[in-house]
Image 1 (cartoon, rainbow, N blue to C red):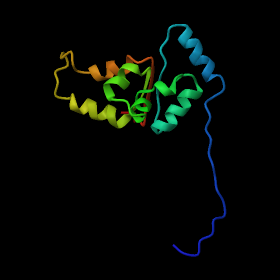
Image 2: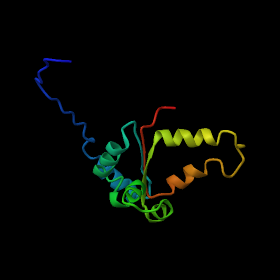
Image 3: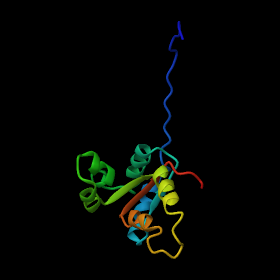
Image 4: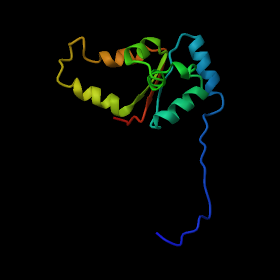
Length: 127
């Protein structure tokens, strides 16, 4: 590729709908847990989740704690939220495929994830 000239740059912004942040707060006040499921990349999903009050303490999100150098077990204990990549969700489901449906360990990982106060599933597919 030679002799190319940059003639423009485009930026896209797809903000959350007006009022979503307040709707999430009202749901929380009513005792409803809001879980976000999106096809966006984890960083994008986390940023949007912050804008709409789904993640209120990003510094206490599990992966942010690990990125800061904390051990996994300690990060899990201290975290109030988690952003889960759809590939991890799929990998865990496949790993448990051979377990009997009545096995109490089947799906435990999912129960652990959603036990967090703030939960976001990113890069998910319809399946």
